[in-house]
Amino acid sequence: MKRFKADLHIHSCLSPCGDLDMSPRAIVEKSLEMGLEIIALCDHNSAENVGAAMRAGTQKGLTVLPGMEINSREEVHTLAIFQSENQASSMQEIVYRHLRGTNRPELFGDQVVANEFDEVEGFNDRRLIGATELRLQQIVQEVHRLGGLCIASHVDRPAFSILSQLGFVPGDLELDALEVSPHHRPEAFKGEVTGLERFAVLSFSDAHFLEDIGKTYSLFLLDSPSLEEIGMALREEAGRRVLT
Ligand SMILES: [Zn+2]
Ligand SMILES: [Zn+2]
Image (cartoon, rainbow, N blue to C red):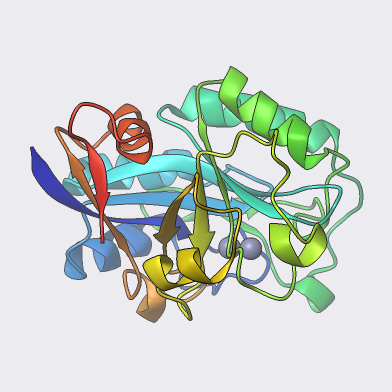
């Protein structure tokens, strides 16, 4: 088995708050420069740039997992990470059916759909920054039904996190892991908040700018860079694990 350096929370220029330099291709190049071996592209409520990022990754030898950062009805951000583009597209369909409103670029920012050659393919006009009408519980269920992993985003942040919105992690919520923001060390956080002992705690960059990619990452001991292996590591199966 081998150690894999992973940053599974990166936004692209499709996120209204993501820098326009965050093209799928530039993200892949910067990730390699930072020594990352697995990344996940997780734009707000959309997976329209994951295909381009995956193709750019294949060309350059980087594993890119397709993901999304879904905003629940409770305004909790959750990472939904998949193995295939099809799975991510199916989740996106569900999200789009439960997302209202039109983007106002002058207020929220542009939402650029790009291809793997750094060309603009179009602009997404949905209000991607908004909350969906999906309850957190529903999101977790749908992500699992499609074969993905669900990781509660930046649980230590004072807004848009499960702890800020709900105050606790419901006992029947089957999250696969928790993410802490770059401000906390995962193992320290685990000791600070009670009731989180059952979860693996990870840390990623939540990069919206190229210079932040890979500044924060988690290390996994895996046989190969796949979602299935990451799932095994989160459950500490067959020697796979999260390294601190
Ligand atoms: Zn977030
Ligand atoms: Zn984010």
